[in-house]
Length: 112
Image 1 (cartoon, rainbow, N blue to C red):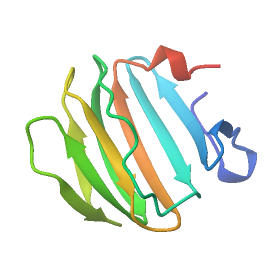
Image 2: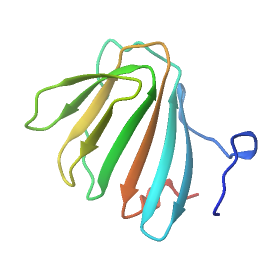
Image 3: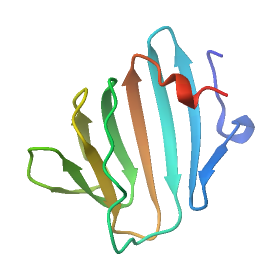
Image 4: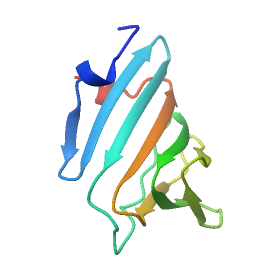
């Protein structure tokens, strides 16, 4: 699908407080993650994957944790990268947040 409009976009509830919309082509995927259950007392459990990931904080504030790196307090307009195979996670500091994640290759498990 080459175009995904906001008012027609299919959102998937990943869990209560987190919805995700995706668009993809070839080996590139973009996911918009909307969090509505903050702030959190604790970070989500760390995870890793073989995909390269970059993320743009479109709204809200988070702490980004990445294995072997100092934690980073990020707000709207900031970006981060999660290297392939490194454990990483976030902690939501604001009531809501929006992250725009890009992945290469595709996160097949995100495709319905």
